[in-house]
Length: 276
Image (cartoon, rainbow, N blue to C red; front, side, top):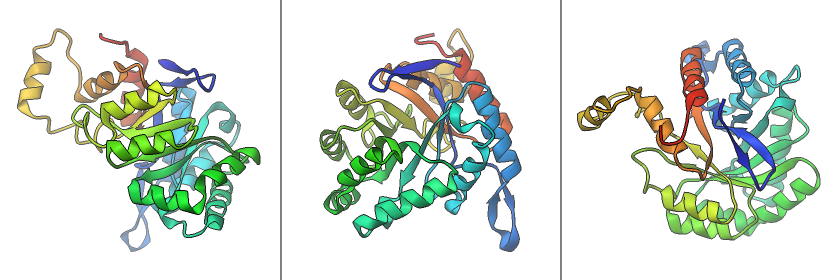
């Protein structure tokens, strides 16, 4: 597994981080899609056993079930092997007390005493302004002081101006942005990635495959370029390599729905080299 060093934080991260938003599912009562818990736990532990040390989830993933399953998977000594990231649903917080309510609930669901990276989830201008007015930065400081959170962070879905405003507002340990081969100027984009990195803030990437759309149905003009290259690779590998060639990228998150996808992402991550 290729790793990169978070110099600001002093540890190495696997270049592939497992996202837990698209875990394998089964059909339950009333045709509801439920996580296949046995398979999901098996996959998460397989990823960790093969070098992944960043596991990412969030309060609303799988309608609240993802954190429970991640908590199950990280028992039996696995918690100590990873940096665990989850996210505060800021849009559900109406008072300062709500910040603590959600954090304490998430700690219970995840079966842990602390969260490594606690992200303000999916910030845009409106959510940021509301959370800021409610005192979310004071809450993060206290959560760190109390030992419940180690590294305050945020994930982002808005424009570059809002991104820079948030970056400049606090001493963030990390930020998470959407970036892929066709979204280089979308939301924070490449410019935002560079802005954060210049301030010493590690950048984690989400949606490297744009929700799976970059793994299939690739336009012919792009396929023809790839086919004429001296080395043949899958669309998934091209997408990962494009991101990996940016030194600002610390970890690339990818949600996997089955063991085959997980093994493919692991294979690619092990073989990654810059500009190869």
